[in-house]
Image (cartoon, rainbow, N blue to C red; front, side, top):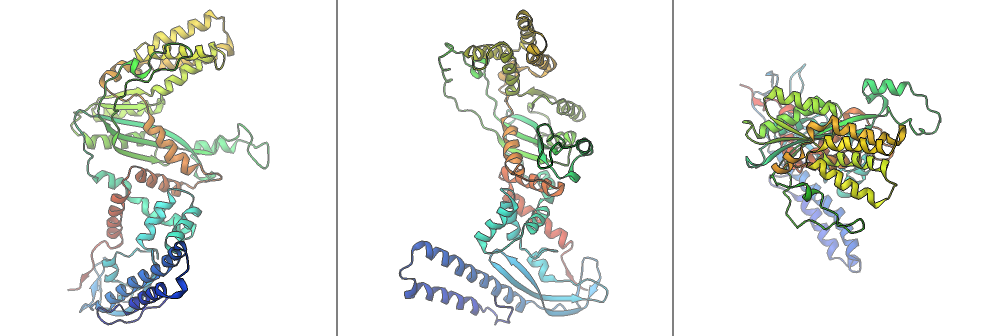
Length: 504
């Protein structure tokens, strides 16, 4: 790599030399018989060097054109630095390779140096990696392992970024997500659209020092039976719950119980698909995930986003949950605090699983009659008869003479239906066109948490895991390009809190 050298005003002689070398190589006899794949590989390297040199020449030209400020400049502290020194360099690892930035330093004894050119270029403080490299670290780091991210960046740019540096770049990148969403443009929605809030949780395997106190205390009480691995039942106390919250808009679509669960003509006849209908899709998704915030905090964040979309509380608010009592209590408390009416609906898929659990108390595994019984029973729940269904399940178990473990699943299912009956008002939900399944947040738990955080052997520290989850959420919703522009602007304000002004 060529170092810094003065260039004439407007000169890009070194870049032209590299360009001519690339052209000469392509026109030479040596490459006349190579395959197109080999040409691609050679051009990828030579053109990368050409672009790196173009960047270097441009930075050198800026250095030549930078004028000393008479009397020096004042830094963010307001103190004047009267002494100007040219040719002060720093390295910048760009997406094209390493370049040298030469600029004027303004000095004063006992004060930190001030570099006006750094302000103009928005050079990162405390890091030699460019913002372009930082963005690649985020894109690749949220997709897969840090080692894989390092390899992907090197393949794409030729720049080697270590896994420790990738973690540091990700930590730096994730600090502006909350304020970004507070100022983000509101998604387009109609007053008639249903405003849906949905929450869930997913465990992440953490390092011992990153567990919550109660979990760490429980883990400390366990004594592994084997030295080389954990035995069944010993994996509790290793995870910290990631709490997820999502807010989205959806156009209402009225349905009936028969639309959700069509009648089965016979035990061995496939269910006829319902008439084709274009389902409304969730739009304007806001997604947040955190290992640090607890359930009430995430509920409050979801309500804040919902209220930002509907400050006058004119729309229908629906909260979709899986029956978690802490979630429900937090939603009810937040609704009271904000004076907003929120209809809480328990995910029908969870209810369906309880019905199936009861079915295996009455039928052999794989018995087609079990499916018919589940369909009929679940349709009754959709019609608003959850308490009657629970009573019927218990009567059936009693009629069969079941006791103890024979009727355990049936009693659990019946108790679940009774305890959550207030939030199983599916007739109102279906008539109002509300969603009754938590597929959006369930999918987020799988994609956002499991697919990245549950890689084989992964053990997470809290800060890095929080940054990965935060950035992965913003990447999933498609907001990363807008966020990155916002983040760079905020970085500039933090690094250069006052644009450096000439001293009076």
